[in-house]
Image 1 (tube, helix red, strand yellow):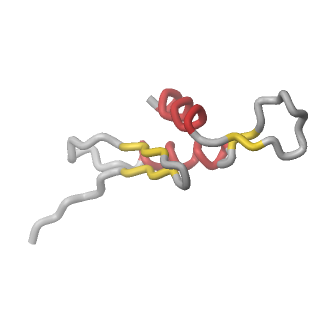
Image 2 (image 1 turned 180 degrees about the horizontal axis):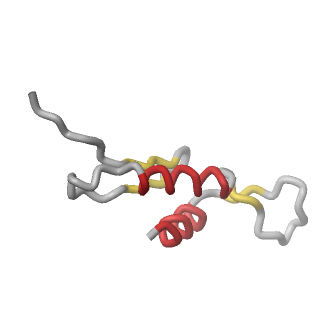
Image 3 (image 1 turned 60 degrees about the vertical axis):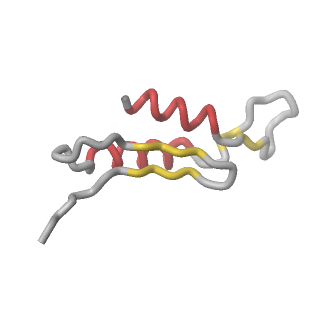
Length: 74
């Protein structure tokens, strides 16, 4: 699941050229290591008692990772 989410995120964010050649693939606007850490945290620290998926939303100006927390009623 981790690899699928990482590939999805990397495929759908912008890539910038920086100091690379014109025909290069470019580097992801959000570094790969940052995405790896965010996705791993969302998957590891999710609440397994709540049957809700971890959602990864890619927008033009941001990436949102939604992991349901603990629902407590008082």
